[in-house]
Image (cartoon, rainbow, N blue to C red):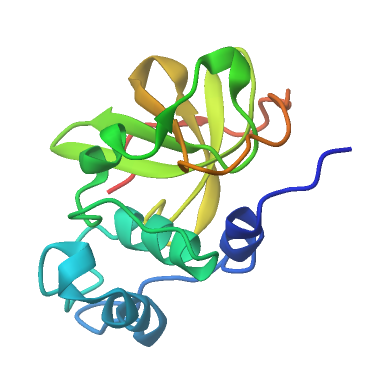
Length: 167
């Protein structure tokens, strides 16, 4: 069995991290943004009400020494980061980029079923979760430059509904 990349292990360790209720902010999510800094994020990030899927992906990758994309807070900027992967070459830890009403979404591939990718991501229901996202919304499948692709596509059961908006 292939081992999983360190950045995916880092992402899994954050499952369950949630936004703070109301006008409060999660110290954990704001801490990720602070450690990444404005140069990486492309903006001053000071509220978890601002979409943070890109913050999550950048932070997990940076924990493994991988440089994130410029303007990491913008989900669609990840569509040109790293190297492209064909759908049949996907492996756990691949960065998937999706379009959604009003913007984009980015997260890590953990598996798939016939209709959807199973995505470990931040800002999915205001938390770090695994969600099913329709394959036809995927605009890019990426892998870090200089890192070997380890693993192969993982078939999973479709047990949850497909997500319709990750903001």
